[in-house]
Figure 1 (tube, rainbow, N blue to C red):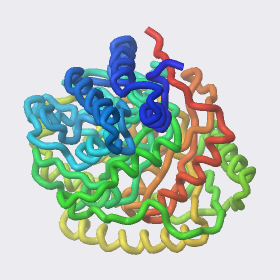
Figure 2: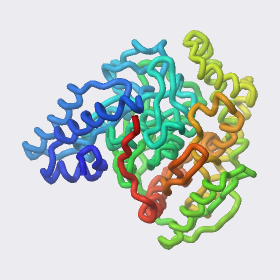
Figure 3: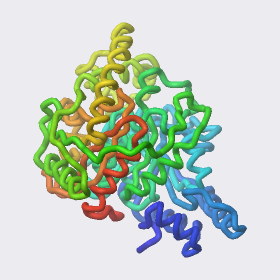
Figure 4: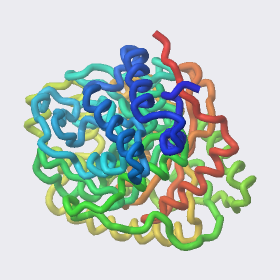
Length: 465
């Protein structure tokens, strides 16, 4: 096995045991980046000298007998929409190419304190708006499994890099599926944590409005569920920069091993390949001793509509002029399509949306007390043909119902890999979404590990071209 193929947990164990050095792990990932990044355009900014220096510091600490952090020497990437000191927080737009951060976002600071080695920054669509990853600043990110399909978005660069062996963990953000969908499209494990689990703040910009405050989170992509456990715990360190952060323990009380399976929430037209992936996940969980009950689940459609309203209200209030000035054709098109489906709300509609949120969260919490895990689609379709949203946006957003609906409630969701299938675009990754109650990421990890143990192993993929 090449060093760049190691998972985060394997990397830490080998460094602490003295079997490899952090420097060697870092050099291997930087060389891997040289080899494969030109084909996928996942990493769009790098500082090799800083990465090598951080790796050297881990090795020096070990040589002195000092206690190493939980992610000591693990090569990771950071999405370009969060502050990393000395780098531009571009969010995929030319307007911010010179917006150099003077400090780290808390999630970046937590990863550094844990000993992680940052090897690069990953691409995102303009304004982090799409489930596809292309912008006018850095260009087009490709899926290393299959260039005909999207790598997902908005954390498409993070997932593409992780799948191709550029780092053991790719940091992402999620306000409408931007961690879960890239994990699904790139054949990875990825978790959207509970609101408040991971502290975050970009000091380079004003605080966001209430919609994003309630719905946007940071979380990891990885090639194993064990790595999600490791990296989320490292990300979740307390930080007073984020008033929403809650220092809740990573493990909760005992719970019944019972899961609900919902193939077609609220009449969603779930593709046969996706249905098979969901039933595979349910069968594997049942094989691990869980009770699985096929049943309806609480609503996604109205929460999805309200999520879009709050998102559009934020854009109208804080980014309308920037969209026009940036002039990114993809972003302008998608924004216009969203406004056709859900007009920008007025003040009363925003207040009504926030009022409704409490009722939906209540319904979901009561359901998840009965069924600690829900198995449902990540998307109603296999990974989309790349740039499909520019051809048929209504089809795309309908398929993403479960992704868009979940963030309104601030609940955690995990995309778990189940295997591969063959769609019109050729061989594609498949998976299922797992949902649990607030701050019960531990339940998601337990269920995902049971499914992972009975699914094909995730390996590093080498892109063609």
